[in-house]
Length: 116
Image (cartoon, rainbow, N blue to C red):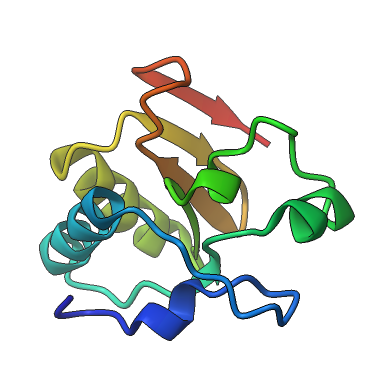
């Protein structure tokens, strides 16, 4: 990866797990290049215990290494990041005031977008 270190995707509970899918990381790296702004990963891989602790869905793509949450400090960053995620092939996107969730989990519904 050109724009990230694998450590950025480690589970935040401290267990050290970072089983991200290569395809997800490749799409994310492309999105970062297209956006032209830094991506700060607030959540990458989550172990089952950490996912439960943060209130994640039991079917969360984070637990299978297909998902990432990216901080969006301003509306301009949010626009650039969203645009780049769509161009790089992410088809599952959630938008919140302070972050964007992107995943490419093939076991979940495709071409969907939601808000938090």
